[in-house]
Image (cartoon, rainbow, N blue to C red; front, top):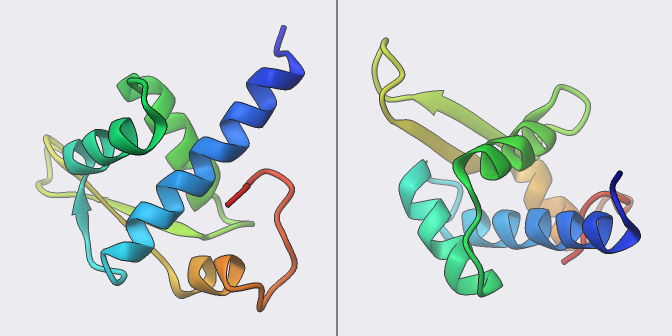
Length: 102
């Protein structure tokens, strides 16, 4: 069962991920780079599964704060980028998302 602390941690992690991606000026970022940057920002390691979960949340069709794409047809390397909507969210131009905390 998820605790309130788990939920708050998830909101913060998603905010950190978007902040990192926005700092890359909406350019594509390798998944591995994002994971390393998130480690520095959070002070603890995110598993690949946890990072993919948060990216799925950020890129779902109702939110669209991030985009992902595989580098090759085999999907060996994943790339991620923030969208303009993510910038608008961070800058307060659209309503806050209760699942993301900056």
